[in-house]
Length: 99
Image 1 (tube, rainbow, N blue to C red):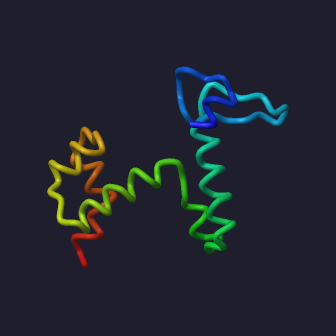
Image 2: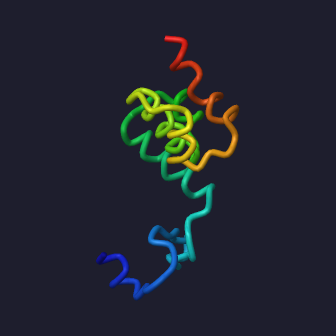
């Protein structure tokens, strides 16, 4: 909430980027999200090979995998994460079914 007050924002995206010139952007681009995730992973001292595979899409994929692990059905996973194609979801979670 303080972020909104300090930056006098009343609408629009909550998370915003900051340029090298310290200007606040209208939102975060996918490249910025990727850099934030990778920087966080490096701070956590994760293996660099793993870090190279991290992207802004990683949280969405991880959420689908967590839902599978908690016993959620494919239709529930698709509804919660707004997936439109079953083959896309299955590509990210099929290895969990093979265990």
